[in-house]
Amino acid sequence: MATCPPYPTHPTGPTGGALRHAHWWQRRWVRYGALSTLLALSGLVILALVREQTGTEGFLVGLGLAVLPVPLLVASFRWLDRVEPGPWRNLLFSFAWGACAAALIAIVANSFATRWIATATADPSHADTLGATVIAPVVEELAKAAAVLLVFLFRRRDFTGIVDGVVIAGVTATGFAFTENILYLGTAFGTDQLSGDSGIASVTAATFFVRVIMSPFAHPLFTVLTGIGFGIAALSGERQHVRRVLLPLLGLLLAMGMHAMWNGSSTFGEYGFFAVYATLMVPAFGLLTWLVIWTRQRELRTVREELPAYVVAGWLSPGEPFALGSMRERRMARQYARRHGGRTAARTVAQYEAYATSLAFLRHRGRRGRAGADFVVREQELLHALWHRREFARPALEHAAAAQSWRGHEHGYGHPHVAPMPVYWQSYGQVEGPMYGPAPYPAYNPYRT
Image (cartoon, rainbow, N blue to C red):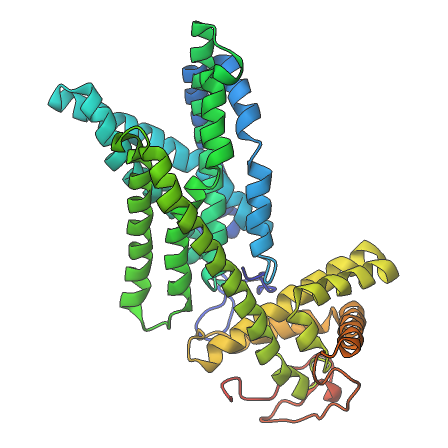
């Protein structure tokens, strides 16, 4: 997920001038305040609803058990996002939306629909089955997909590909599953309190095993399909309007279908749940895991292929593209910076790595005609950010590249062109390379292959 480059202080108009008379609702603090208020109110309402259904003791037990898989799931999605790590605020929004807004929408809509079907058909058991297999998948996946859509529309610079869609969708679904697990585990605990059951034979233990041990990835797996649809749409050209609309819809429909299969597994007979789990959920989880890891490796390859152009222009040293294209060498660079400059230096190197990755992806899109109209402005912002962090980052990355090259030569492999070599400054336009002035912008055609 792209790390946001520095934005202009004021929004700009068509000619680049500042919009001095922007409407009050267009101000960032107004939008953030309204969104925070909405999520806070949703959280309070969902808290009251869950506590009313489970009781205070059941709520606390459900909360304690439901929180267990959350750190592991969030850490997993954050690990996938380490090539181009995005801002934490996007993840916090996604989790809060899933846990508060999406959960509230699902509880209210599912309850209303199930009661309406039961009243219309006079068959409560049929209404419950229909609600679980048809209503719930549609309502819940739509509610979770709203978070992905909001990030896609309003944080577009942070949403550049498949991994971004997977991370936002997965974290949103993790928040949703967290609230849902509190409800189910708290209700199960209340049932055990009435029946006197405890230990392994209790309903709470069975619910915990199924929802937390066996299938903590269920909700993330469903919604990730929607995220992949948005991620592929983000890779599409600006003029491919049909593709940018249909792909997210296709991903959403697949998420609803898999969700419906999972919820309906109990109606497939005594072993229906285990059959669906073994034949659908586990293979789908493995396939999506492979897809995301393959995409991550492709992103690293893009970094190695695109950044050498900035070496020729004098913005990067020869070894940096190869160091930035390896997660191991990135980590070595941060460790080196921490040893020699402390936490501040390590954080600066991490920011440099993120900006450089965003720059590589931007150039990759530009060469394929998929960059937006603000290509030049965004490229300048990213290069400006790199230039002001080079003091700590360049020595650390050069050290990592040299160490890996030395280790590679010992074992018969290594990075090409990481040995010290002269940098040839070249200009394709009117702006010169960095040796001619303080932090200028690159003078080459970004669409040149």
